Length: 266
Image (cartoon, rainbow, N blue to C red; front, top):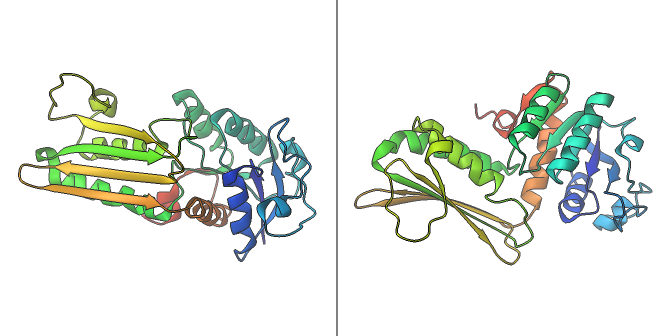
């Protein structure tokens, strides 16, 4: 049995992860945390997630949960995830990070930590999205420079980072496949009198209502358009992907992995 601690267990994503762990064979939740002052601290983790009493209570200090833990799952904020990462290194625990919005410096800290522990770090834990990553790589190479590429992502109005980590990764994959530098060719929205450069990769953001997550990659050629589209109907898809990653990573040597590794898509 793989024992999991969920960071942010009182939030929407955390509760979904707890619910999915509860009905997945081979894993169990043994702890959960929340930030100081959160109303969920002291609450029974199972009751809060709607899966019944577990006699496991949400705490503030991650160190109080790690003694018997095998894997930590963290979908919170960049600052919180870096604190979690430091604790994982100190306690030599595996970690799955689904948080987005990291700075280059923070990503470097994750890479350094992965020299000591097992770490799955991915901008999107959805299995479908990770298949999309592979498809976008192949389609971009096949179509080449003859097609303009635009990426549009949409999420709920509470999402803090923009564009989404998934859209950023999609833009990187397109750029790498076409031998371009995304820092040079990425265009984030347009306004006014603009003329599109043939090398541009457009990245556009929508924030509205309770949209779970939508990503569209549009290839525009002369006379035809090809679109690749993924829609997440619930947070469950991300939760189940993270649990799959947790079950996989415990059998790997220390290192930095993503969902392409977990799914065997490399």
